[in-house]
Amino acid sequence: MATHTLTVRGRRLIQELRRAREEAGFTQAQVAEEMGWSESKQIKLERGIQPAKVADVRAMLSLYKVSDELADTLIQLAKDATRKDWWHSYTDAIPQWFEVFVGLETEAAEIRSYQSELIPGLLQTPDYHRAYLRAALLDDGDENEIERTIELRRQRQKRLEAVDAPTFWAILNEAAIRRFDQAETARVQLKYLLDRSELPSVTMQVLPFSAGMHAAQDLAPFVIFGFPESADLDVVYIESEHGSLYLQEKKHVTRYNDVFNHLRAKAHDADRSRALIAQAIREV
Image (cartoon, rainbow, N blue to C red; front, side):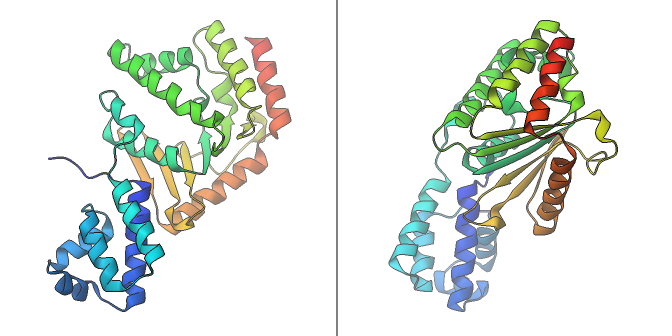
């Protein structure tokens, strides 16, 4: 059975539909009765468990008597929510949970990343990513899939160079710039970090070993996706060996924002971080 994956557009749609219903003074049961479907369906629609058809959205908006402008916006969201995006051509090479990640990354206006052991994906060179995948897969990975994954990453990285690029703020533990198998891979990767740090959209900080204890020591690497149209849409992604965890509750997002701000304060600033990376290149 196909799994319904809720996009950022879909999340915004159900948020606005719920708000419109509440402002119109309807309960979910009342809407279900008016629409001629079950209350269970209404609940699933508003939780994003069941995708909202354009016709259903149009009917609900008519019931709620929203403005023509809002109706046009939400109907367009309903159409966009189920469209296939550019990364769907790579579904042969990535698990479904990572499709969600790429979708968030593509639509986010702000991306903040903390990595304790690895260079962030948006800043990796092909050779570094290839070496990492082979190590992670114990040299038992399918080479064609590895190359497809690398190709996908190249496409993702292009967004940092776009006119409408998101702001990307990366904090790397110093371990990430010291752990390499091959000297040449290290030099190329570290020089690439310096190059990417010059992009207007990129801010990069290194958390040095000398920083001592910090708030993320017992946390897995994480990424915070920000969506300025509504802070309620912000999402925290946490990496896991067996998949992923996406946190959307305000208390969790606030907690990780606080941790990130703590790390930002303890890490070297951008200039000192570049100096530390340059030093690491000399020491390779």
